[in-house]
Length: 497
Ligand SMILES: Cc1cc2c(cc1C)[n+](S(=O)(=O)[O-])c1c(=O)[nH]c(=O)nc-1n2C[C@H](O)[C@H](O)[C@H](O)COP(=O)(O)O
Image (tube, rainbow, N blue to C red; front, side, top):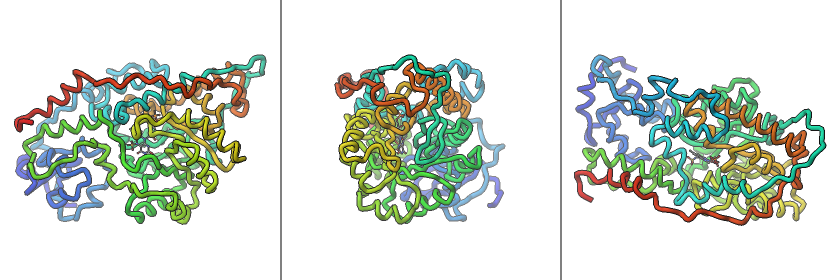
């Protein structure tokens, strides 16, 4: 592409819907004609019209998105660095960018919760909002963790636990832990290397990473970041209303050696995550581009902007089509009732993930661990459990190895963990995720010794007391008071409400 240098002053003249240029990674693009086609609406682009959009663009778009989607003639040239004024780094990033020692030393993180504390300090507000939010009143998000608190151990004694082995297999693939790194979108919101941090750590620690459809990094970057030839990855699929796009994606994943296809079935539409949505009101602050004509649907936050392609018509019949597209084992991710788990087993699928999407979808959905109990009992009644060809995973709120062992005792093959790994790499890169996995290994070893189980096979239903599991005690949803009003008030701008 031409190396023509263009001054920042020249770019700044193209700052409206009639002529809109943006700078991304030093390249200048004329996106005027693309504005009406942008899935996230034109307002978010107009906010950066005539300016550098790199920081906002990077976490949401895999590399090459502009080159792949805009005709060559829309490429204007390179920004002349001599004409660019220093752009202030956001204050939280400043703390880290200028002085990484501004963080507590990694070895001060003793459990998964510690990463959340550090990440909250480091993450930009938009990233924190997206990662930490749950749907509506976040009752299910809180329930995911508190449900584990209603399960108690029945440890056994005088067993030789000098050697403890917590290795296992998931869909026949070896794993050093009954834990996998689950799919979470927009990895670059938290760290420039995005999902690659998870790939590196998963490879080094011998666990499996589930690659998200909505990754910030490209699929090739994530697969390319494997640290071992034989490193195993799974792929999480949002089925696109345009089935040919999905077919291409699934075939590419299979050709790249991905060993499992996890079809997300709990998100025909992404949930209303209000922390995330409130961030969108900031965009209204740039009223200068408020052309008034287009009513931006600000009621869905970033989630809507990235997910309008998801097909809400997806149904059981489509699984026949999917089985023709791939030979990979197919697992349904987001099953929340025993009836659907039994149906998946009877259809001969490879398994289910009992999950409510980390509490980001339907509020008041039950926790994966609670659904696990009813699913195992229903499968047992039909002679469908245990079944080596049908594996049950759960995710949501898993923060301790004791949570993992409760799930294994109740019949889960393994558990997915999401946010803790996002927080770990947002603060410390892949080293943070490696440390998080090492902490879980240390907890696993200690807990298995103390419950009297030398291997995962010895972790059996009699080791847990689940009598209180369905006794929900959830705090009444509360308004968020002052801090919400502050956020809302930022939207009160020149154009009176
Ligand atoms: C935290 C988080 C979770 C997301 C996630 C993004 C974030 C930031 N995204 S989302 O953008 O659509 O909501 C996905 C996703 O891409 N696909 C998916 O299947 N699950 C998605 N999940 C759900 C995830 O796979 C697990 O079900 C959930 O994270 C488990 O709960 P914990 O975070 O408490 O471990």
